Length: 338
Image (cartoon, rainbow, N blue to C red; front, side):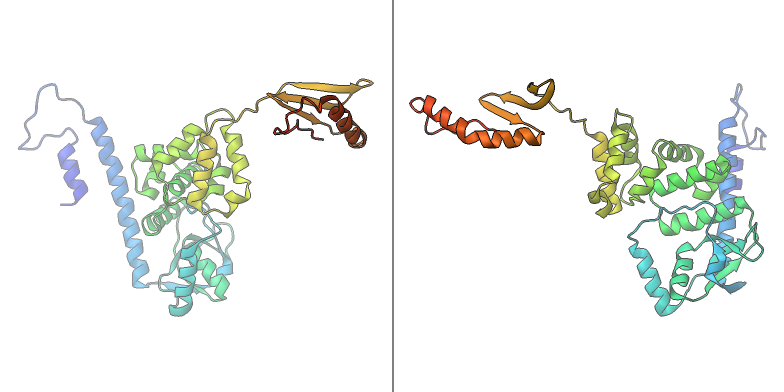
């Protein structure tokens, strides 16, 4: 007996069997039935994906296509990143041993001369760079079948990061796929789909794409980032961070840390020091700032700066004449800056 049939027998449908003892006032099993239906759907999708993988492994109906004739899937599940060591390894392996696993494509729905990939995008890219054809299985797929096959293949094999799964779920929903399709593609239940979507929808896509896949960052830290970004000016600090050279030179996990720290830090409020403005004919030419025993004179007027420089020797002479008997010899004088 199949596992899902066992589940049906366990949860029943309200139909007593010869060995079933009916209890009075039994509650309807509506929620359990719904869960059973969801499990049935996931089991069927997984079985279909398994069958497809077996077809790929057997090499049936494998053809060679020009990679330039293959367009990417409508919804991408991977977040592109500048540094992809796995791609370099894949390219080297294909260059030495040839392509071992074919990709899956469907005839392009809007162009009879082209194809659309369900998965195998990196193998397509390798073929383009090596200048060779790509091995593929061509299969008629609906939009629903395309994203389910894509998710069932790429999710487990490529070990998509939490945020890649979240963004994939969000993109599917944005393109009109229902929650059941999202669950089938990712092999998850509806509560987990809701958790993924809550994160992807709470953070600007621009920030997510700038950070990248962040494979070592799981759901708890992404949820913490969502919380941090709700604070005043946190989002602005995040955008400033992603534009810095330090951020651009960092790997994806480090980029997440930089954004997380920027969003979680408190805004720095500059202390305003009391100033005394010096004006000539109503125009400010300089200002004085006093802090303890220090006195700072600042001016952004070139004419006044030149005048002051010429007068400094005279001022020093006058000061020396007036205070030579009282000026401490071991202490520095006041600071004068232009």
